[in-house]
Image (cartoon, rainbow, N blue to C red; front, top):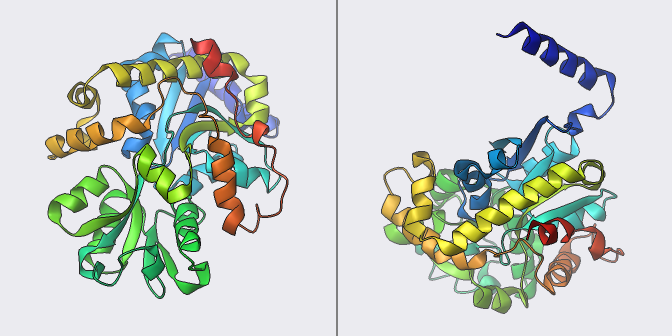
Amino acid sequence: MNPFRKVSLAGAMLAVLAVPGAALAADGGGKITIMVGGATKIIYLPARLTEQLGYFREEGLDVEIQSQPAGVDAENELLAGAVQGVVGFYDHTIDLQSKGKEVEAVVVFGQVPGEAEMVATKAAAQIKSMADVKGKTLGVTGLGSSTNFLTQYLAFRAGVSSSQFTVLPVGADNTFIAAIRQGRIDAGMTTEPTISQLLKTGEAQVLVDMRTVEGTTQALGGLYPASSLYMQRAWVDSHKDQVQKLARAFVKTLRYMKTHTPDEIAQKMPKDYYGNNRELYVKALGASLPMFTSDGKMPAGGPETVLKVLASFDPTVKGKHIELARTYTNAFVDQAK
């Protein structure tokens, strides 16, 4: 190891120990760690794709992408100061504001959730709509996750209270598939490519589809901005140059996704993202691309829909005054043009 680098690392460690909350910070040339609530989920594709395309490096950024199975776990890492940003659902910014935490989305990737409530084929005869989930066990990625928020709202809208069904955290990808296969859940909410995998094997069917604008509007009453990069407001305010570079890198990626085929995009991704199911991955990617924004901006009316959803059942949000303007900003993506 270069001795000067060793001294530099030691100095950085001392700085972190000496200054409360220093782990939150990264100076002009420091590493930025972004936690993703399930990096292999297609809804969060822009995080890894930006890295693969080299856009972080082009902006002079040192970015590390880490993954947690559920968005709520990534949120906790952000609040603890272990990471500088989260690629997760925008609805966490509203939920956190109701708890006195100032977090804002600085780039919006998805204008819809990209999720589907899947019902196990062996339970499909009993569950034909969300009104039929009384007494059933529904899978979510984690308690307090966005899949949990949406599950509760869909049931609420169908006249079923959260006390009338059981929620079981089962993660995503293979653990979700295993929960369906083993009969531990009757239905559950997940994303691509898991949705396509279950449809291919015939082990589950789509009950509520929120992968499209039309399906989301029907299920939730409007656009539901979802996957986004959100950060603590204090960090954004003190690191505007770095946030601007991040926004520029992500907007480049969103443009790339709009101008390249699913197959071309898949070629850029690590092989372990699709394993032996590349054809299935490309198909799922093609079905998912319309959910993404082209400019990273918050869609008009989106925050209001999210607030309506959360305020209908979340006791921490219900009845609280939420300043939606403080839960997101378009300032950085506007400059990215």
